[in-house]
Amino acid sequence: MNIIIADDEEFIRLGLQKILGKMELGIRVLGSYSNGHDAWSHISQLEDGELDVLITDIKMPMMDGLRLIEQLKDRPVAKIVLSGFSEFEYARRALRYGVKDYLLKPVDKASLHELLVRIRQERQQAAEEVPDDAERLTREHYVIEQMKSIVEQDYGKNFEMERIAETVGMSASYLSRLFRQETGKTLTEYLIEIRIEKAKQYLDDHPSLKNYEISQLVGYSDPVYFNKLFKKMVGVTPKDYKASPR
Image (cartoon, rainbow, N blue to C red; front, side, top):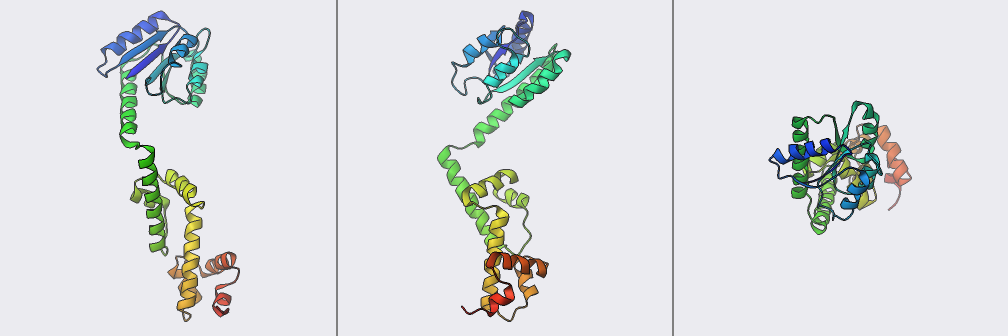
């Protein structure tokens, strides 16, 4: 785990290096700087992935910690802010720039160790789980096709995104965005289209079925709502659709 330290107090920097050196986490301190400008000069020369963690003070000469963090907002670097009680509001502002956590001075060794362990675990998990682009796109396409298949087979049931997400192994929020991105429709819109098409098939193939029976078959317990939705989607009521020549 590669770390850079930025703090204008030398004894803080030396203390952190000593603490980090005793942690059995494979830590390597790439640099220790008294201001944000010098720290950024070093960081800007590193490739993405070379720096894992930045530990920075808030108030420093030449470039303060907030500006330094802002410079790093698009880089995959975990950011830890050091602050005194009087700088608490600055620390809160730093959270906007993706700061992992903040530690009060003097730094508690156990808290720092726990935080670094968590960061290492999260970074390892991401490295293990994130496939390359081709693999990711293939998997996403498969997941969307799987979702469409679930909807087409179980259109008469109540749908919960959380349940489908669990089935395909993704979070509900990510799955919702992915489905819309891939199909141009929300899952609800897609489900309605499938249900209305199925209702039209029932009306064509089974004209003896009552309106409320078809409503229930396609997943709507309220036939009045189904009637309004059908007319909105098709332009005519189920009754008129059944009577129209085809």
